[in-house]
Image (tube, rainbow, N blue to C red; front, side):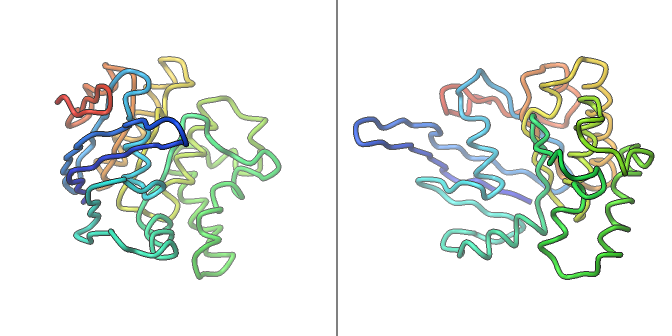
Length: 220
């Protein structure tokens, strides 16, 4: 599903060079649910952004679905992100002026298809996360857990093969966090490959495998 080989990420300014990732080698198979853990600033989100094609490595190779992506044009990477990868963020990133249904539809606006088809897919995604009764609500009318469910529905509406989740339970209490993790586990059982950054050891233990980072290096 995704393979990282010799990944290095360096951030440079005119006077400072910061090594964020150093020689990362990861091979994730289709259908796995993998957690990434480590202290703040160790490179977890940077690694997830490289996996999601939101950032480029300074060195190394990224392979997704047997395609080595070095040299791909921005428009081709954008197409892969839109069609094959779903993103879930800690801060939800919902648009308050749009209804729940409209928020979920957003990824589909960049694909061919009718408005009625987009609505149908968005309703299916909301039903899957248990929010079919909140379609006409706005994000400001929802709890934190409900907002994250909307974010998950938006991530899965295009039926991606890979879901990347950056601290999806970080802003939630333990009960709501467990509900969100249960939804992710169900999606994984249905065939989605999921990579999740988390600070919660108990959450990580419920996934298939754990990758630990420390100071930008892979320690397990």
